[in-house]
Structures are given as C-alpha cells and as structure tokens.
Image (cartoon, rainbow, N blue to C red; front, side, top):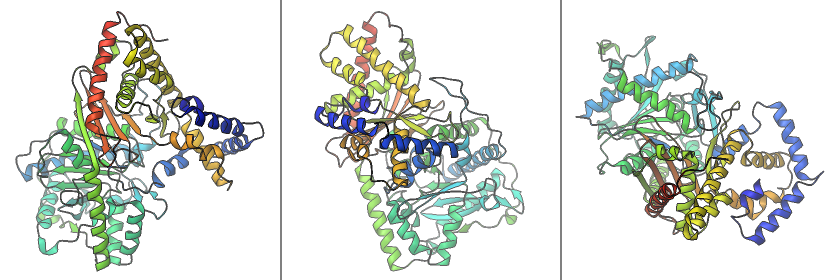
Length: 583
C-alpha cells in the first residue's frame, strides 16, 4: 500500500530505489518481520499499541509553538454585545454551560457516539471526552508531557480568567456551594475592575506559552525557581479551563479576522498575551462580539471539540440565562490575581517570546471562504460521498496551482477502537492524479469516468483507514519499535520517499457542524496549506491557511483554483446525463 500511495508522487528512479528497499525490508527473516513480531507482542500487552507512539510523534515531540502550528480554533457566530456588561453576561452563561457539560462527563451520562458517514452505526470510544477539562500540556526540553488530573478532583474547582493580559482565579465552589450564573457574573465584573488597576498590573506571562516548546520549557524552569511563580503556575495547570475576556481588537470583523484572533490573538499588541496556550480548552469572549475557543490538540480530536461546543451553543440559545438573585455579594471572596516575580532575565524572555509570536502572526496567510454555488445536497444527488468529492476538488486545486500532487493528510477517526485517535487518509491517489490531468485535456465522458474512479479510490481508502488498516500508524509503530530496540534506523525510514511521504504539504480535515460556527488551523509544514472544510446543505465553508514566507503558497490563489474546480466539477456532473452507480 505504501508503494502504491507514493509511486505517482516521486520520480521513477527514486521509486525504483524505494521499491528495492521495501522488498528487502519485507523479506522472510528480515528486519520487517522482526519488527512486526515485536509490534504484535506489544499489541498483546496494551489496549492500543499505537496510542503512545502516535501521541508523542504527532504532538508531544513537536517543538514548534502551539498557536497556528498545532492548536485549532472554533469560531463562534459573531455576537452583538451592547456593552461590556453584555459580553460578561454571555461569558457567565457560557461558563454555566461548560460546568453543566463537565458534570455530564463526570457523571458519565454523555450518550455514546456512533459513527456517521462511511460504515455508520458503529459505537465509538468516548475516552477523548474525559480529557476535555482535566488535562494540561506541560512543556519539556525534548518532549512535552500530557498531565491528566483525576476527574472531579478538589484541585479542579476553579477556572482561570485572562483579562488585559492578567490572570485571575475564579473559584467555582465557595463554602461548599457551587456558584450560580449570577455569582459568576458578579465575579467576572470584579475581575474586569481589578484588571483595570494599572498599579497592580503584572507582566504579560501568557506570552511564554505562545513560544516554541523548548523555549517555553527553559523559561518555565527559570520561573519556578521562585515560589510565587511556582504557585501561580500550579493554579493555572490545574484549572478546568481558561476564559479569555478580550478587548475590542480594532480589526474589521469578518470571518477571516475572527479566525485569526482565535488562532493567535493578533499578536502581543492585541490579544496574543491574553491566552494560556497549554490549556486544552480556552474560551474567548471579545467585547466586540468575537468569540470562540482555541484548543490544545493533544488530548482530543476536532469532532469531540465540535460535540462540546455545539452543546454549549445550543445551551446558550436554548436555555434562558438564569440570572436569579445572587448569593449576597459580601459572601463571595474577591477573585485572586495571579502574581509573578520577575527579573531582568525573565523580562528578556518575555520580550523574545513576544517577537517570535509577532513573526508568526505576520507570516500567517489566512482565507476563510464560503463557496455558495452549491453544497453537499447537490453532491449527494450525484450519489457521491461529499467528503470524497471535496477531497478530489482539493487535489484539483493543488494541481492547478503547482502542476503536481503531493502527500496529503486527511484525518480519519479510528475511535472504533479503544483509545483510537486518527490515522491518515492519503487523498493524493493515482486515480485523483488521472482525474486532475484529464480535466485539462480529456473529453467529458472520459473526465466523468476518471472522477468516479477518483471518488471510489478516495472512499475505499477512507474505509481502509477508519477500520484500522491504514499505513501511517503501522509504519510509525514499526519505526518506533526499531528505536526501542536501539537498532540502527532501518533504511525504509531514512529513504527520501518516506521523508516525502510524511511532509504533508496539504493537510486537510472535514469538521462539519450543525450550528453556525467553523473550525480552522494552520499549515503543518512551512511550504504547505492547512485546509479545514465544513460542508453544509447549500454551501461549503473552507478555511485555508499558508505562510507568506513561502514562495510556493498563497491562500487566495488556492481558494480561487478551488472555486473554479468546484464549478467545473458541477458542470461535468450535470453534462453526463445520469450518474453511474458506485461500484
């Protein structure tokens, strides 16, 4: 499968070299057989043989900064707040919803998810939900650690509120009583007032979490030498979630600018320091109505984030705000401001983090685009899978921009398995290549056949990946077992083709929603695109990112090619009298 996935993406000479390496690796009694035997032994001893390998490879070993490079964001519908108090009411209602959702998780009353789309109806592992609020990504010099707190632990009875780059502790339980929504609002109002007091203002320590992981780990080591900093960090690291109360950004509010503010906060001059990027759930409520959530991705996938945020959006609109009589305000202790001890060295570290965040902000090229010519209903009428159809359209757009196809990543949920996360659907199939070439010079009947072939190949690979038979996790497992055995890295993993197979220049994901919101994330390589799409019945929403620093990419150019390709594919489907049946 690996060879067939790569044959059409590398030069013939390189392919022949790779083929010889693969054949040697797979010989009876060879390295591959030994590693496979060890992997089978591991699978006998563990619930999920790939989970730890995958988590480290995908997230914990990565050294890039979390904003843009790793943390995805969910952009909520634009809110129309009349004033600051209005935005605080929204925030208090949102946190009330979060607490209700967390209680459902803790009491295990969340209904089990079942697969939709291909092979619908299979029950899915729910483990990721239990990591939404009780995990924390701790930076390390070489690899990070995913810290998991016991659910419902006493230490976790607070949230952190960020306001004007200051951090405050909002206790949710006072005198053994849970705060009501009105109490939460009262406390948020106190926090806003405290944040405006410039005499007590602390340096913007949230910036450190926006830096590269090794840089942040080194800075954290400096911080914890002082007990004041140690205590502040401990309180943040154990919180349920972070609520970021943002000032108006001063940017013109559109889909693209809202997405940027979720991903990186607009840099240190805007809201970039009013964040704590290591915490999996950060809810952002801007005074100008820009709201959403930005997530540390290592504990859970986008689909779990969607389920949580859709619950919250429905809670916000469906349950009236319970602003009953509050507990007597005198009974509520003033929220504590987190304090920091700083030194000239720490000031220098903050300055360096601010500059690196600014560079990232300037480099990100984001384009959120609503394709309104048709949506998934039209695609379904052609008897085609909307996801496969969109993936083929993405290949066509990339080919039109670059004259070639490249290794493409589409996340495939493997939650059919205990602790399952994702494998990769390799969408740059040889059938997709034949189709995109046909779109330039073949006659329509040929093009239609090629489109069907491409869609069938995509659909078949999707089923392969979601049923645990994809190649990426398996190759990763063999590679990691070799490392554990302290073997010299087998040639199959040092070969140019393998390196290219893991450079995902096109990184894609379908994140469908049933309420009005959308997901976005950055590219995973410097010369690549991040493309998140949300198919709705009468339109398709695309969030495309790339880096200005690359001469090979431009988000607007990619969107234009995608737009044109989608229209041509519709025209092609219309021309061919009746859709053939899927084989």
